[in-house]
Amino acid sequence: MAGTGIVFRRIVVAVDSPAAADPVLETAADIARRLEAELEGLFIEDENLLRLADLNVGRAFNALTGRETALDAAAMELLFRGEAARIRHALEVHVGRANLRHRFRIVRGMVERTLGEAGAGDLLVLSLAGRTVGARIGPHHAVLSALSSVRNAVLLVRPGTRLSGHALVLYGPEPDGSGLLAAAAHLVAGTNGRLTILLERDQARSDRLAAQAAEEAGRLGLAADLRTTDRVSLDAVCGLLGAAGAGVFAVRASHALLTGADRAALLERIGCPLLIVP
Image 1 (cartoon, rainbow, N blue to C red):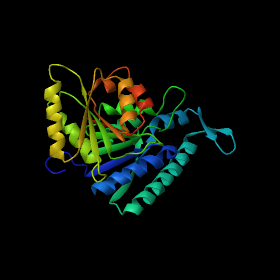
Image 2: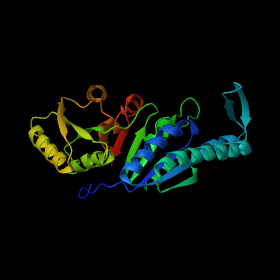
Image 3: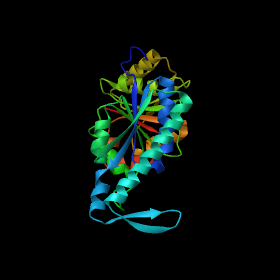
């Protein structure tokens, strides 16, 4: 990707629960292998859970016995150590297959704040099926909170979805729209990738944007299919993702899909990995 200004040299994959770890670790390791990037695994010890444990109101559910037990601060520390060990082992398995440069860190803090700080990597990879705390605080809460402070690209991965070489890119009128294309193209490098570029139909600029997008895709060396829509809505995007068979959806962090009322619904309904570029 020389000349595009978009290079993922260091990839950080942050995990707060072993239950959500394997798919996101596998995806991150595959990207690092293809791009010859360094991979850092990050396990987050959630301060909120420790505070609950200090109040002696925490409960742990054992899926094998079907029983709940009290979870105090000491038990929570033990739980964190066990989870970190399992995630470290899973990371070693995935990177061992690809012989990657890698390291593993354990950080204690508020999940959303820690994710923002973890964005020091060129690409931050997160699961959309992390830990849920209570009935109202789910994994998407921390992800959405962190997006405002992460400075670099973020890839959100849902279990059961796989990153493929076909990227649907929501191309807008921003002066740096080419940066979004370049990030998507770099992410699928080495996969015989292709781009589907989605433009919102606007009589004043649709022809100019289409020409600009096609020219940029040509410079990136990827085949591109241009599509237009009357309105970029959640339903329209999800329909196009399915129709195009896209394996990743790329969008600006500033787009209304991620700043408006539909942003949580997008994370719930997205059927492929989501690449978010500042």
